[in-house]
Length: 284
Image 1 (cartoon, rainbow, N blue to C red):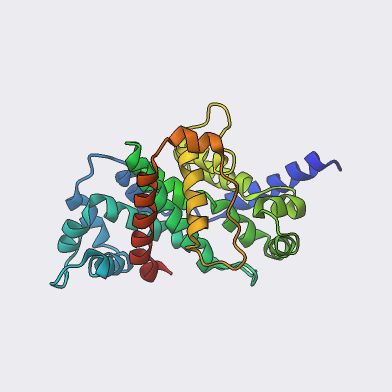
Image 2: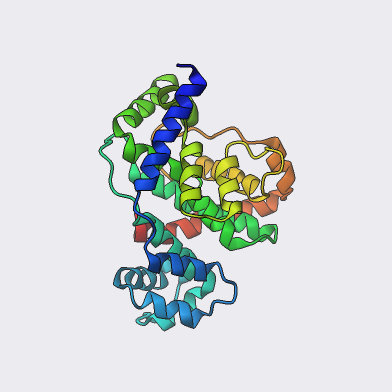
């Protein structure tokens, strides 16, 4: 079997497994749809939060965190929603839904905690970059949160092989995606795209997953370079606290496309760290 045939066969297997993944519950799908609706009111979102005890607890915990520096204690969803604002509430819901959708894996080498730390930090960084560029923040946050989601698909359905991937990466001091291709004949981009299509994510989010390592692909959505740069920044800040973490090569084209100033980047670095600290103790 040729290398291309082997890769195609492996990808077909991954796609079959993805079709067996639990679909997003109807309530979660409705909530995510409402979050993408710019006309959604804080009141309607608060009502849905109140129906989920776990989500309610996370919202109240975030509202009472030191990040917001208030003197009185927040005790109701309405108070928390008013304090946090629509965007923070939306992002918190997105994180809760996604973090809860994936079962644990029988791969002791895979650090789930580090994975979610990196994903949450990248989501916040991508949103901050998109704000600086006056882009749609919701898509940027979602794309940042999901850019590496294919890694979860691979580690859940191929735990033994993914352990070999991580061993190969450590032994050869190479990029994770190179190790995946060597061991699995596919990578987390292919797996992530298959899942994004199965769960009907927006085209912009699919493009960001597709291009977060190669944002220079012709015709790709402008969100891809945003997530590419956010991913590199978060690796450089070492927010995942993963041992022997490598900072991926940054595309000069993506850097030039964004065109942000040094002062803007410094502000993004600081705010990314602050937001991450506020969310870290809630989810991880």
